[in-house]
Image 1 (cartoon, rainbow, N blue to C red):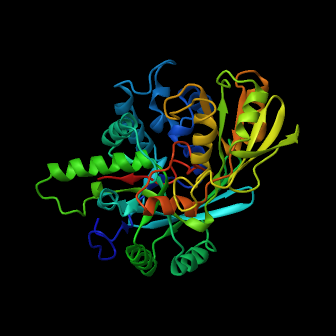
Image 2: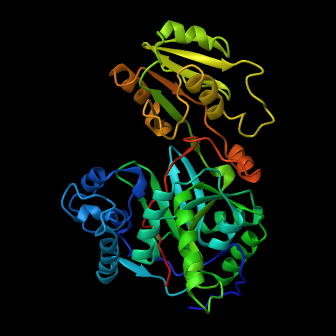
Image 3: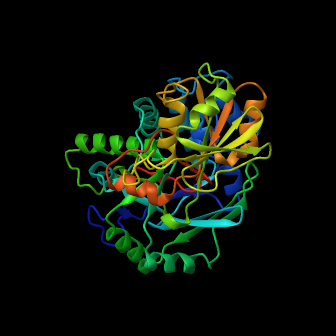
Length: 424
């Protein structure tokens, strides 16, 4: 349907007719993102809930156990399940183009994002900026899912620099009655969604985003890349392409950068590269001031300080002056310092993307998870890092650099199925 407002190509964002859960069942329909759990976990979490979104985003659970998530039958099944949800009335589509306000509350902190349709050309041109590399196989998987369902099921998680006009609008909308408001059983996080459909509000949001130089991908690089590939392919196949077709846009939730929480993304290693614990600590003295912190959990207190769990004890490692360049947007990052001076130099782990000697633990699991994996004998040491800041992420994106692997862990994750963007 035509937009309520005049949209020119390259305004960065636009409203859309969201496909979303019927009243009263959003807590039953919506789910965690497809990529934070495996097939077995999705089966267990779904249980006998026929309205769970895992039937669409993890469609292999509709087949016998052991069915590969990339089985050719899986993608058509995602479309069949989506059609079923619509036919059953579990998903309904708004009659007019809208924006939505989505709030997430974790540990007393609430962040507010605007749900919108972002233009793939802005991703292709670099106006929607990325900070990490994507893997072709993961892009291909999301492309097949997009093509089969003809809808953007999962959202890209974007950030923007502070905008006073949008902040005032957000605060006003958040005072209104929401469409959904529930606490998810699996993680205890609160999810709230409001409809934004007043013409003046639509105009304001479109105009303010149109003024922005950039949006920043916080999470969802593969979703963004796949959406851009599908949109580009459809544009090339359409001789009457205008740039305004729905396939030119993909689903995103945009948050003010200052509201976002980046958690630590920690490392555990399987062996000490032939060194004893004392030998490793001695070698680390070359680049770090090493202090024994005892047996109680110790968390890094500031940037360039690391927490090493080794032999049942915690040690703080403070990077010595001269071990990093504060003017280098990559070299100043703790993920780079730890990779260069600890994992590579001392432990011989040179490629974090492929090495089987290192694993990664998101900060939401806490320091106890690091201790558990070492104390069990599975791993020999754990390294806790101070979290990257959103300002660092944006600086890296602005300078055209790429973050080292496993650098950011955003929490809470966007709930899938709160709103869907139909490409038709």
